[in-house]
Length: 332
Image (spheres, one colour):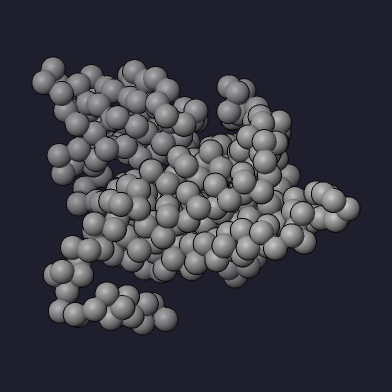
């Protein structure tokens, strides 16, 4: 079932999310046709219970879809919407049509709600905002926004009335951990895409009469990239092993490892490609820019290393390896 589900998503993205489409949407062209294809497919309702019209899958079941969002540099928030709809459905809230992203808000002295950076906000319809222990769904209608950081991200704010009148999602929800699980999975997909493209380039690029991939220095760099990419994938899968709400400590391991790998793989891939990898016309930069953006999203490796370190100090297990075994054994 997992293969059938992920294969269907991969086929759809292969047809409708080409590098040319990604470039066009990043440049400001309409994203609605791509989003409508995804909406009509029903993949965004994968975590919604069957009784509410969804597929009723668990977080581990949809991990391949989240990874594919990274593999194809998807410029619309399918992963965010999938997780947000699942969260709202389990809280007894019917999610509206359209894409949903996450935000962490703060109320200013004038009553306005501010979100410093909302990932993929430029291509979304709704924002699920956590602020002061409350979680509410806000529309883009009354929002002020400006580009912040990555080209699809934005800084947003709403008047106090919009926050007070927004639909509330009851319960306590850790949106940061949920986002970290998502971006770990997307990083894993993007890391594998960068590695495979770099490996292909090394086999195709000729220098001194043979492919540069035959040179020992390049082979060493490729082996290091491979190590990081596959270790990151394993960590990201671990972060999505629990559901419907991911385990915070497993997510900490996943996001820390994938964020750490992002820096290494991005640097090595551009080293092997040389100057061509940075050009706008070359596809590599579509992925490495996302590696850098998602590395910082929902906390970089230093943030999640602190979370893991505190957990180790609080744990009855005396060694870090014992703590890791405890977490992985529970999944395996």
